[in-house]
Length: 345
Image (cartoon, rainbow, N blue to C red):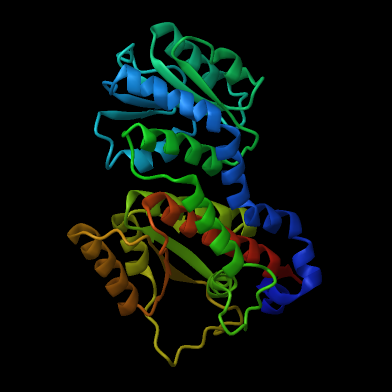
């Protein structure tokens, strides 16, 4: 039988077993700064080259990690934008187009083939990959810029590429320092050294306590908040081995409507085993429009009708990408604290 022991969240010995994972989360901001500083020279060259070439006809984000770039650029890119996670490139991509590639690992043959194809077609190419990697070896040409990276952190690498797209007028503001600061602030609030019962509280530990005996249903209204919800749900599943669902409103609503209504008189241990009920977790990045408001209202009303708890994680950083970073890291900390607190008899 698995149960959640909340005292482990403030127990130094229990937390020490998760030290490497928690330390990795705390260093998220440092990784963003390190990658930005390490590629500063190449970034300036790429910006100068782009200014000379003019605005591209379209932007293609190639490789398995292209979906994050799509989530950021799709709502605001002034030219047509395509995410292409499959090997190769779209048939129409050519010398008038910009191809950006995120390859933190640098060893994917499909991504390397996409870079080679982009170079062959004469595209403007920007690649973020480790120096000497398979992908980097194919990133050679007159119109090619390689951003050398030293981390496998997808978001740190993505921020580097997004800052370039921001500088050349193809994406929203993505200042690496702002993203790193957002990460640092979450790391302070969610530090393992900040106790659950502290005056200011520890939002990640409190969230883990809320989700411990439940089935988390995660919803983010914006494209980026929805992506953060999927990443957090994945981390919860990996940390606990339990179900955690992230989806659009129309996918989560039937799950809420199927939940058994409860009253204050219900015994959660009726039958000897505590019932694991849904908890609706809303990731709020401040994006607001009539459609999102209606979707959120529909979900919260359905939850209220069936006695399902609703928790909100809000982001207050300045800018879309820093807010995404804030939501994501808070959720990742909560997943790790769930891992720490779960014990087996």
